[in-house]
Length: 80
Image (cartoon, rainbow, N blue to C red; front, top):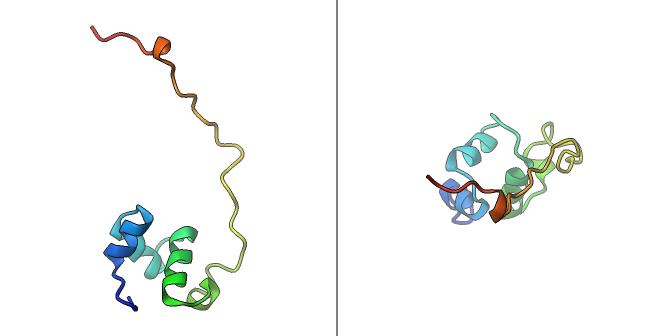
C-alpha cells in the first residue's frame, strides 16, 4: 500500500478486519466503503482502481431490512 498505509492500518481506520481490506484489494469481494477509502488514501478515483467493479452508484441500506426494536428494561426477563 502506498503512502505508508498498510492493510492492517486501513482495516483499523474502517473498523473491519484486515482480511476484508485484502479481499477488496484482490477483487474477491465488493465492499464499496472499503474500496472508496482505499481510493482516497492512494489519491485516485475508485473507478480508476477498479474500472469494471464500481461503475454504479451504490444503494443505501435496504428499505426491506427490518430494524429490531431495543428492549426496554421492563421487557428484559429477570435472571434466575
